[in-house]
Amino acid sequence: LRFEPVIGLECHVQLQTRSKAFSSANASFGGSPNHYTDPYTLALPGTLPVLNRVAVEYALKMALATDCQIRRVSRFARKHYFYPDLPKGFQISQYDEPLAEKGRIRFVLDGETRSVSLIRIHMEEDAGKNIHVSGAPYSLVDLNRAGVALIEVVSAPEIHSAKEASEYLKAIRQLVRYLGICDGNMEEGSLRCDANVSIRPEGSTQLGTRTELKNINSFKHVQQAIEYEVSRQTQSIESGGRVIQETRLWDAERGTSHPMRSKEQAHDYRYFPEPDLPPLSVGDDWIETIKAALPELPIDRRARFIADYELSEYDAGVLSAEKEIADYYDAVVAAGADPKKAANWVTSEYLAQESPKISAVNLAKLIAMIESGAISGKIAKEVFANVFATDESPEEYVKRAGLAQISDENAIATICKEVIALNPKQVEQYRKGNTKLIGFFVGQVMKRTSGKANPEATNRLLEKLLHE
Amino acid sequence: VKITPDEVRETAELARLALTDEEVERLGRELDSILVFMAKLASVDVEDVPPMTHAVSLDCPLRDDAVGAQLPVDEALADAPAREGDFFQVPRIIAHDKEA
Image (cartoon, rainbow over all chains, first blue to last red; front, side, top):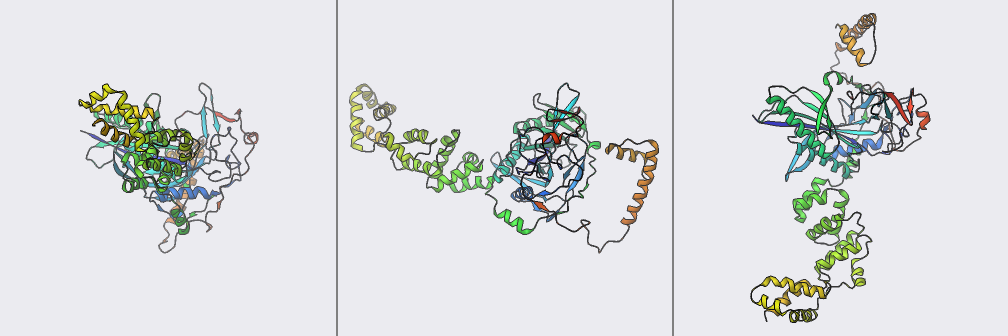
């Protein structure tokens, strides 16, 4: 009997608004403890929530970018639990009438386009941060993060491998970064992920008992935690046991997970409509405005790079991964560079630099100079190394450094003749059939011209002269 | 409708309320009468009545995303029973009940 994993992911995306979801306290990451609070954040009596317009806008961006249906009227709800990082004793979230439903996340898995359905995207607020002091009889609480705007993106249980889960999560990260609504920094917790994992006999359509995995804060851990959980559940069933519905905490250092709490009790959140917030209305105008301003999405851009520019899957993936890089690459092509050559330059040279300054126009010029034979490909790399940090015009640099390619065939022929005259032994071997030695002669010509001789002409002239 | 003492205790537990047996008995009775009232409402025929989504009909007001005044940290911590540096100090949290 073979088992198939069934995985659903819940992703919390911290929206990068300046102020918090329901009050004007600072929403930045990394402030000194408890420096970003106001009376509302602390749940002081008499304070009321006022929703941040930009938070709604960001949530709508994500909802529209994932083809969700937008509820024209959605509602906030209180989710109750007691924990020191939650000053109000409840979290404002959305429950039975979320902002958006029924979308999908598209991504590429092993060269194939996959689409995983979304059940919903809803808005909520973040909790503060607890610091457990090892050995101490107390814990510490920092409320800077309390009240920061979040969206929760809930997938259908349609993911069937750890790798697919990791690719799905990467697609979400890429998307929120493209949309400019979240920095996607998993280490700092601005993108967090819980996984619901179950297994079932292959071919079955029924869902098995699931466990919920928490605390998985990197792509690597998502993959490891799910792989671990699938094999744990498989072993449990194969040895005659059963899977217990529970929440498990991933321990990245040990590479294992352990149960957190029994679920039935803890999940009684006593949701009820938030009485302090009227229903949120989103008009068609607002939706249309946001839709019109959406950027080309990474998966579409990747497909366009393959279709229009005939790039490899790999190059298209690299070039569409980040919006800034994709914009840059598009600009190099728009400046007249051959798309494939531009792709090579951007992926191998440009992206190898820490913070390249060379403009798209100047990179296109550099590529054009190789095309026109003004410089060789080898010299071009030298030019790039000297201009990428300053954005000096490559033409000027070539002039200044005296690197222009020697394309005058008489001049090249003269040098070729010199090289042939100086190396009679190699000439003899070449003429006896060791034609690989052509590389040696080309190298000698390049050495004498500091690499400036036109390589095509050099090859051609050497062959001609050696056969004379 | 009949609320059992166990249901009262469970609800109290969720709300972190400690009830005496007398209170469980009294609150059970009071909750019962509330549920009887709700059942009466539920029996009303509202087939042709449009749903009322809120007591006052208004849209959720939205504010601009601007950072306002922050509480000075000493004021934020002024009522805390205990602090350590700029942190609130609370009884040790056993990591078993945490939500995202």
